[in-house]
Image (cartoon, helix red, strand yellow):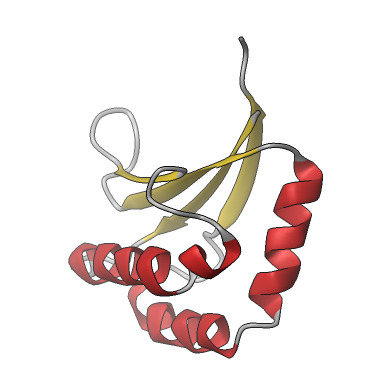
Length: 104
């Protein structure tokens, strides 16, 4: 199993909006590619991490599963619309993916 972690930084004062948009995305869009609440969790910065950081961690079987999900997401008009709704609330260029392997 692997963890796909997506990180983004909220603009100052916009963290509640980013969290709300991330929750909406998980409910309305992520669920369409199999990213259910049992496989995804949202995190935010607290100590040793920027407070503006918001992350989603998704459990995946392997990179092929992640690639298939990304392909399906690219074809969803709702995903493109969501990205545009999120954009005013985040620091441009801060989004990134990290892929980690689980042990055991």
